[in-house]
Amino acid sequence: MTPLLCRWFAALCLLLAGTAARAAAVPYVLDQRYATIEFSTSGLFATQGYFQKFSGSLKLDFQAPENSVMDVVVEAQPITLSWAPGVQMLESQEYFDAKDFPQIRFHSISIKATNTPGLYAVQGALTIRGITKPQMMLATLLSAAPGSQNAGTADFIVTGTLHRSAFGMVSDQATVNDAVGLQIHARVMLAK
Image (cartoon, rainbow, N blue to C red; front, side, top):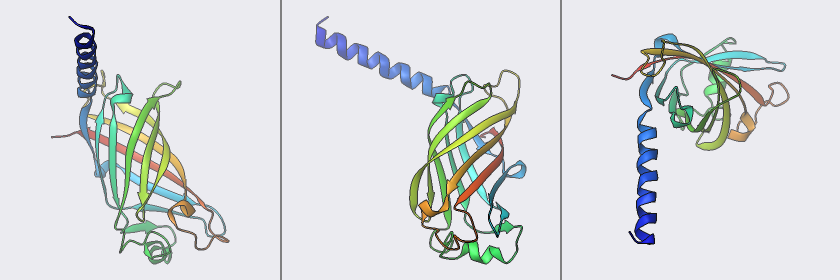
């Protein structure tokens, strides 16, 4: 076998090995019945709210988390908010601009296990108001069926902090902090 042919064969083997590893990820969907996407702010007008409509597709590999991928789409309205008059404000052009940008999207770029069992660092791209920024989230696996891989369901809590000004939401900075906390309670189930 010539050196060129050896290199080509080795590259093909690596490609096939990578494809086999990615194939181990199992498709799941976000079960909205048992999930919440919550955001909270502090400051003079501290508030807590929830997005009411969202969906997500995931490919999870519990043995090799780096093979996992998640894609979540959130509708920018309707929103449930602890301060009712704030709903229209958040849907307005100064904030989510829900009319022109009806969806918020998070797509993972990498998922890595941390030194803490059941805790994963999720690096992704978050798009709000047509602006995409890097976003780090931490996902904690709360429960999964024994053996995990091909488990029927799994429960996670995902947390993170975003800065609203990075997405062009700069109104009311004297009364609402720039940092917005995110907390997602997620139940995923095997895709049918």
